[in-house]
Image (cartoon, rainbow, N blue to C red; front, side, top):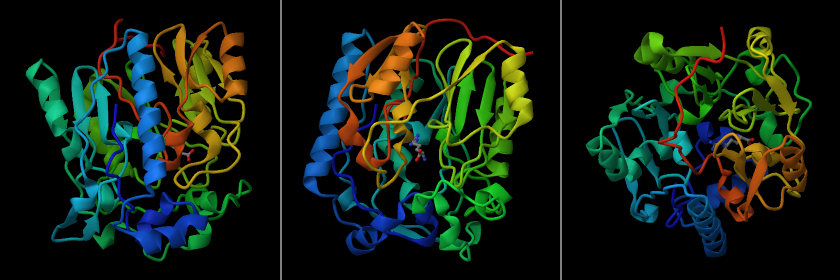
Length: 354
Ligand code: ARG
């Protein structure tokens, strides 16, 4: 699980606009490199502590990195300079596949060094037998981004669900190009030996190929498209609820017939997530963090205690919702799944699809 203390406002470079909702752009311009308002940080830290307590009560072993004071962190490489690391979302930074922990290259400059925060944790897992890999870092130089990418194509952050088909990601046009491989770990979601991935604003085809080749024949990577105007991370779009059930986001229907077929042929149920109850969109995410659930096992699912419709859905499915007060973490863009990484689980590695 991540930590949030010391989090710093990242500078709003052009490529960062894929993460920050438009009505906050001025805030990011004015406060780059400064700490976020203290009450927001305190609220999110408390939400994370709530989650840790709830998980431990359910018998889960929770380990967390030491807090880092991002405010002291200005950095430059030969290709860019930036300030701060990013947030508590370890899911974005590290991918766990079997006994391997893979550091993602990331795609946005303020996140370049974010893996450093998890270094000592990863080393401890390594000492206990995990394989530990870092995907090649990309340079994050300006040639990796489309500096002519029109702000209007960042429709998601206009809060506009009616995206035209002929611009932006729906037309195959992203902020990141194919100059170098890049990916965030959270654009991949695991179903046993099958991994579903989306090309997104921060994950490109070369990055997907890198992982595909690296994992080799033991795993199959399935590329999927969703009707999303600004995809960043798949875990509010296509979320496994356990064997035989996957949650789909009604605002981002799947556009890949092959993927739908594969799930249907295997007898999986594709369930539409109910809308979240949050009154507004957040600075760094949509309201769909309501479906960013942490599944503990076939029965138990951790869900925010305010998300009544989601809680009802889980009960109707015969699952046991484990409630936690987590909403104050949403400000920083991450839900329950984002802020956690399940490193060790019981059960066997299966193939669910033919
Ligand atoms: N971009 C997604 C949305 O706004 C949020 C995904 C968050 N996931 C994560 N792993 N940080 O709905």
